[in-house]
Length: 166
Image (tube, rainbow, N blue to C red):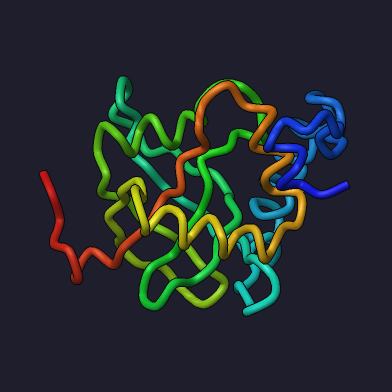
């Protein structure tokens, strides 16, 4: 089975996902490992052939409180790229809704922290970055086909490169 044909509607079944309860439990365990180890475990750097994990801290659009989540990413020059996929569930992830309200945020990488500004990739930029994700995850198109809306490709630019937006 190929993911491009699964996404293309040729009748092939999309790749199998674990049950939603398992995905949610895995997120909770991952965050707990990060918390219990004081951040020494749970984040890892991206490599050319493998995505990494970073901790993204946004400002809650309703509460104004800091909210943190661990997401997968890859590097694109000075930028970090992630997907607003919510474990391939239907709803948009809350962190992405927060970033649409206030794109200024912080990331913690295995190598340190930095301020970044988020935007959704569009047009040729989105196509290029989606292709990079596809190279890291052969089932990407099949997973994305499960969602009722297009999965946002989120670019996290260094705040110094773009300037903080208010």
